[in-house]
Length: 146
Length: 146
DNA sequence: CTAAGATTGTTGATGACTCAAGTATACCAG
DNA sequence: CTGGTATACTTGAGTCATCAACAATCTTAG
Image (cartoon, rainbow over all chains, first blue to last red; front, side):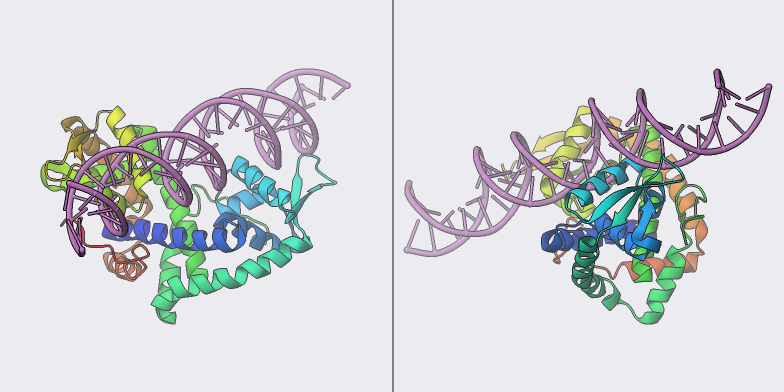
């Protein structure tokens, strides 16, 4: 129970700080950042909204709105899928990739400072492996994109 | 970096599930619950809004709004402080205490199921002590109520 | 081909928080 | 007592996410 409370508190404090930094310096939320990161790593820099939603742990409509913002900013574009007219891809633009690199630097620095620097490598591994055991999201919808 | 990502994901999944359960079954958010719990444990079942805010990691205005809701539901009351007219106490009502007990059961069960059951006691301790090292909230404003 | 059902995505209403600004009170120096 | 500053709290406006309802498309079965 203590551990759970710690998780709650530490997460809040951490994301609050990092989010504030990201928003302040680059106008991106943590989720914006994560989405752009996923897109950058995806083949052809594009993903379906559904897959994005599952990865970032947002609902479908959350993703729609998030991508609305990124589109307006010019960081992503829509693209139709040729084989399935229901799906709309989100594609990271060059501008978006640029932005991601820019924001990435300070974000990573922030994570290091607020998070990683407080632990040894070994502890980080322990933490990662323990946390990995937690539920990924209700069901096992983890057959993602690779 | 992996560890950090794990923290993000696991927290989201976890609080989402628990919050949904709490809201669904009892109409309370996790923060509502935490606030009521703090009040229940406080001397005379009352606390200043400021202290509440610090404990739950919300802003002052967040607390105002949260308490608005709890007041409307009849779970807390306001009380003036006799020695300092600026402060308004939040006091847990009997009804609130009752509600807390009720909600507590299923919430604790949920935490056990989704969180604690996945670890050994030792791991929980490890986790708690590691997480405790993370920033508590920007500064060390931890001189609370006791 | 048509009807039923599942999947993808969007939209409207709502809720929970934040920040910035404002009010009221307290405390401290002169 | 007066003025300045800090503290406690509230309010207005905006953001980010949710859910529920909906439209469009795909799939499967008769």
